[in-house]
Image (tube, rainbow, N blue to C red; front, side, top):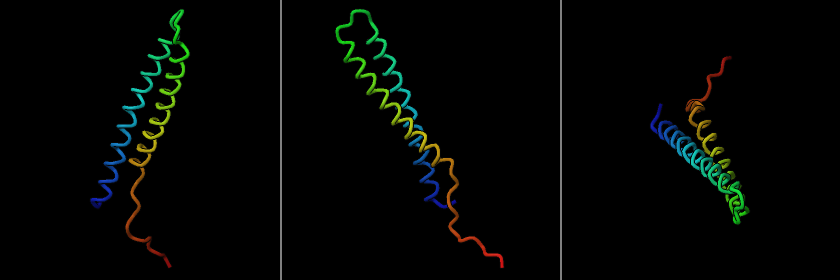
Length: 87
């Protein structure tokens, strides 16, 4: 394993962990905003619904980023030498 492979794997793992953390935080924010929106006689319910939708969108985007980081971290690095021909 050459140093550039290790650096890319480390960057992919960092992307996965950061994406996962932000996904969990955005999902928690979404739930919190929905709880506020569902309060009876809340005059700002529409605001909380819109904010919850945006937080849910952020959770999806960060979840996708975490998934991509996971895939990059688990994909074996390409070999640096061409395959040997049999013939």
